[in-house]
Amino acid sequence: MSKRIIVLCLGLVFLVSSYAFAEEKIGYVNTIKVIQEYNKAKKYNDLLEKKEEEINKEVETKRQEAAEKIEKMRSKFSLLDEEKKKEEQEKMIQEERKYQGFLYEKRADLMKQQDEYRREVSEDIMNEIEDYAKKNKYSFILERAALLYAIDENNVTDKIINELNKKKR
Image (tube, rainbow, N blue to C red; front, side):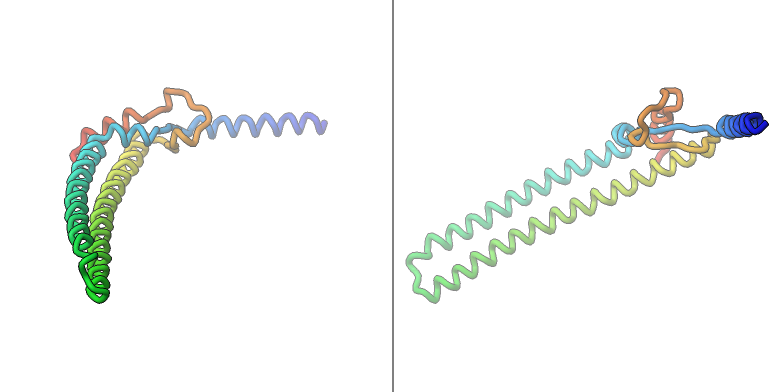
């Protein structure tokens, strides 16, 4: 008798759980691929590369200017008395600090721009995934990297990419 009740309860649990899972629609997305193929992200990457090239040119020019000034100071150094040597050493240190400050400022500007672009692209992608899930009645859309196994028919990556690239953001 108790075996029948256990079997009946297990059957009931199985029936209820299979019905519950039949209602769930689950998809997954490869966000790395989305970022790589999202036109806006590509555009921002190109802009950042150009800005980095410009910064590198500016930094190299400033480095050369600072090196020339320091070299001129060093060439006069042996002819100076102790007091003047200290003054020239201080000028060399100031010149180096000025260059380092310029370098830091330019790198910080680039990083700030990069962060802004990343945040904007991430928001676009997350909003699109959410819109797509709601529109197509998905209960869950998961990140592909977190899954050990998934069937291809649940992959919505290309659909998300297409939707993102259709929209002018």
